[in-house]
Length: 200
Image (tube, rainbow, N blue to C red; front, side):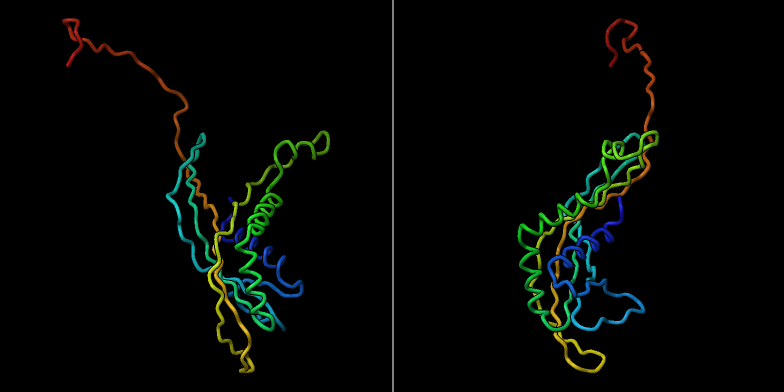
């Protein structure tokens, strides 16, 4: 399964780009050698991975798969003119059923082809391409309160900044080798005593 962190930021960035003004950049925070864009922009910063359920275990022929449901907290910061309106738009839509439909559709559109689709799309006389592992399914949980944060730019001037914490649920999977017995050998044993009655 692809890394949960990368899948989460990709899905959330696509969501933000869909609902925010088209000319507003959405960037990943805490990057080296990256100057702030001119004009309004948004930053995403992952804050926390919190387990929300007991891990489950599944088995294949030679693999043990451990599944963990997590609450992933992402802080979204909006800078510049219109930041207050933009953060309100995020808060409203993220906690609406529309967001669940969006992330569900995003998962389906980014999932690899099924075996039958891959075989039908392959040219005749060639083998279908190998299937990649599907991305983890991500769903919105809830959003925290929007808050205004003082921000002073490089010219020592105050700029508008608002922050909101978005909580998403994602599945983390860890695969481990699991030895299995390929065959079993049975042997009969006499469990009766010399007197013919069952032994103690």
